Length: 389
Image 1: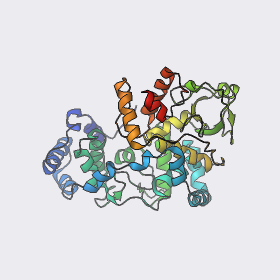
Image 2: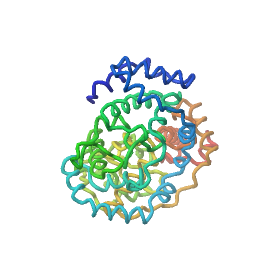
Image 3: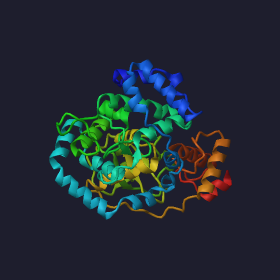
Image 4: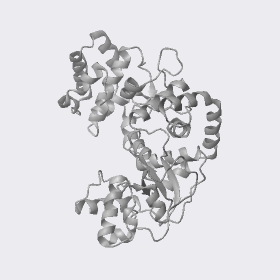
């Protein structure tokens, strides 16, 4: 059970209000001011916090234009994992070795994993975002796409402001994340750690604070110390493809008995550990055993391609070789993917939004239809499958 600070807990305890969105922006902000007063915040704090708030169209544009996540794993990984990032990762591992040792001893999260998120989120702190955090959060709370996610974050930022831990000029990512590992205000309230001992949690400027806080977040959402997260493997052509995918768990020993072989270090794997066989681009592309810790990473980011890339980068920073890209058939175009999603919905599948992105739900539906049609059920959609549907 998650224990929230009292004031933040009160903000989450009003579900009817938490769903309010849309309408005139000024009226919306006035409503949030009234809600803050009901929570017990004094008028001076409320006025100071909400007075500078402005709607940010740039935030809305960024929210609706996440085209990078339409790339498939191989293309996305090649785009974001550069030689410079790998070299900087190794240099940061050496430079902050004592911090990483302390973090792993306390929270059980290895340096490769933290380095991977530090790299992908902000390029090791170099690019933390230039969106005004308060404006972004209130803008997204007002927008009716995901108000239930962002409205509580506004009140978490208010509580941080009351404590003197949030500056109204704070900038970060368009979705309101702050600092070198990009954490939302509610997570800073719950899991922020003063890693450098200066009495403050400053995720933008303090490497110890950022790394300790990121590790505590992962530990709190279920990270298992001493266990692997992702291991690249080679798969035989005779494998039962219907057993692949994140919905099927088998022991690592069972996969090995079926002819799956490791391409890199075992990273602490034992044969009794539960794992899925992950084929990001079908049976002709890269293949990985994905363990419980891989699933935990989806609490950090919901994008399948992002999480898989971060997990793979963490293995590279831990000594694994470059993945074998294989020879997967070309991906469907954005328009073809949307048509596919519409046809899957027509057959009763839940694919989430019709967004042209091959996410977890769409993969699950594709695999189900491949099984039904007697096709290799590797969850990789092809034009032939689209035609059959």
